[in-house]
Length: 122
Image (cartoon, rainbow, N blue to C red; front, side, top):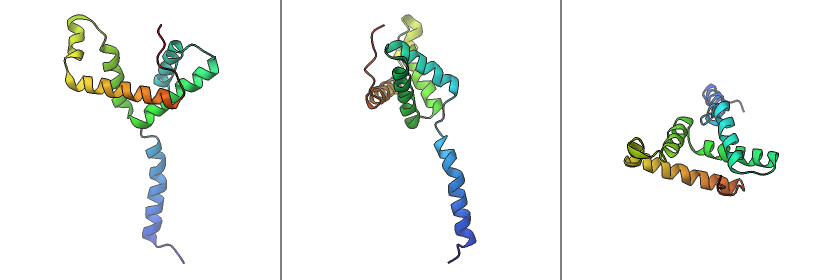
């Protein structure tokens, strides 16, 4: 039985779309390095063990969140601790607080799935 030209086109389109879907949440290498280095700093331990666990955490987050959303969420989370009037912009904007809560939940779930302890005190 021969495949019809239409079914061949659909199969080809599906095969071409698969790699694009896999890269949909690809993060730049430099951002991955920055995240993993910060994570390793916060979680002292064996170099290769922490390298793998911290990489796993970001890979897990990257499967859930597109890079642009990750940038917004992580920036808001980091800026949330700015004191005074400058920080009130972040603290007083409810949509940003929703993103901060979601990002923290994603991090906790990713750490748990990658067998990484909660953030250690510096």
